[in-house]
Structure formats: C-alpha cells, structure tokens
Image (cartoon, rainbow, N blue to C red; front, side, top):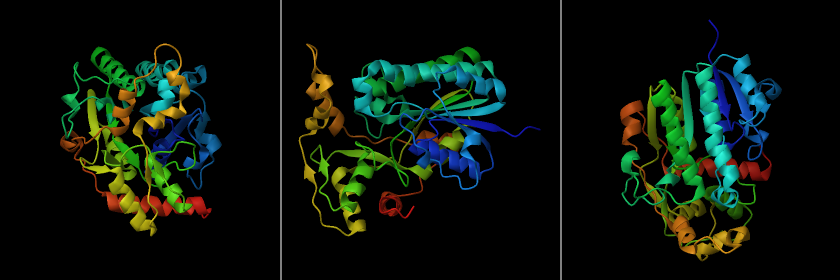
Length: 343
C-alpha cells in the first residue's frame, strides 16, 4: 500500500513549518509548498532531509501547483497559505482576496478532482471583529456582526466556499479559527513582527518597546504546540466543520509584558501610544476622497478576544496544555538563542 502523502501550503511560515516538522516526526510523506512571499526556509527545521526533494517554491494559484496533484496520491491538504497581516490585506485588498479566497477555492477544486480525503483550512478568530459575546462560540457570528476589515472578510468568505464544496460534493473540510498564535520560531526579525516576537526582540536588545495602545486590551493566545495538535486531529473529521483553536483565556498587553520582563530579568518600561497611530505607517489608506475610518482602526487595535474551545474538546477531545507562563518562557528561550546566533 502506498504511504499517505500530506500536502502543506504555506509550509515555510511559522505555523506551516512547525506543522511540517510535527508530521515529519510522525512518519508522514510530505509535499511542502510556499511561494516565499512571507515564508522563509529558516522555518523548515529538518535535520536529515534534502528540502529540494519535498519543498516546492510555487504559488497555490499556479499551473505548477496543479501538477502536484497529477503526479502524487495526496490524502490530506493542510492549507496554511495566505496573506495574514491586516495592514497588508487592507492596503492590497484584491491580492488578499485572490490569495485567501480564490486560492482556497483552487485548492478545494483540485482536492475534489483528485479525491483528496480531507482538507484542513487555516482560518482566524479575527472574523469575530464585531462580536460582543465572550467567550465567543463558533456560531456567535451572524448577519448583524459580520467583520468589517479585509483580512477577516477574506477568511469568512473562504469558509463559505468551503461549506459550499462540502454541501455540494460531500467533501470533508475543517476550518480552524486560530487565536493569536505564539511559540518558538515566531517571527521576530521582520519589520512588523507579531506582538510577542516584537516584545522579546526589543527587550533582548535593551530597547524600549513602543506599543500602539494603552496596554489594557486583552486577547486570546494559543501556544503553537497546542494548535498543531488540534490541526493534526482535525484531518479525521467528516463533512464541514468550524472549530475555535483557543485557550479560552485572555491576557492584556501589560500582563504579557510583565511576564516577559520577569523572565528576561529587565525593568525596561514600555511606551504606550495612541492606538490609531499604528496605521499611520500605511499612508495609502488615507489617500483619495474615501479614507479609512480611524474609529474602525482604533476598534481593531483595542478589540477584546476570548474564544470558547468547547467544540474542539467535544469533537476531538482536545484541550490546550501549555499555559501562558510556560509558553512565553519557551518562546523567550528560543528567540534569545536565535537573536544571539546560537541557533
């Protein structure tokens, strides 16, 4: 019998790379795809594998991507590829829709035509942008609280197409709505890294972090290993499913910063700026007659999130195991080694 082949898109990103390593250690044959617009080979940490044999630098919208399905018997696709930074999506909405929506539709149609058993789609809790019920359940989103910004709308639309394929063709697709993901290998080097990566980097270099908020807003954070376990289990589900991947606990910027300061043994105080100024680095949003609403931007920066994870437990017997203190400790230890050149 042929071994099960798993395809991962966005495989050279933070989450995709960690998922690839987990599946490799479990013995799966892998096909890794990334166009390297956001990914980097540093996220692929295989010690004894020639990446040239399993990594395909290509776009999921390309003809070359289609050929992978022609040439291989793929059993499962983890579609992690996408444009995630909110400012990037807002500044280039057509590209965001093309990648995040049309890209998934391309994946789904290829999976349909080539009898792929299961698709797991990376979605986001950002689509709860206007939901005010906490902890937020998967069904709390409705016609009265749909998202406003481009990124969460692309993911919301992608889920609707995923459900369409399941309802129409009987396919198996599970959309995992990620909370804020952190852990070792989180990006700390790019110009605008995620909050946790940025915080650790600035403290490592004894610099004062500048946060664009009052620091009181709280969000739900999930450790990478916990997320990967849920994503892996989700491949077994039948039909269409939407599942929150969250800790069901929220932590403020100030709380996380205090934990990081304690672990890194520093007393550097952060500077807290007006939240709307975060978006001033993207002047194209304010060009022309129709300018983006600063109220919407301010709401996005300061929004609260806490997501219920009961469904994940009921369907897949999953609960997060790594608490925020241990998770940040592991993340800081790895990131410090990376910044110091030890790894």
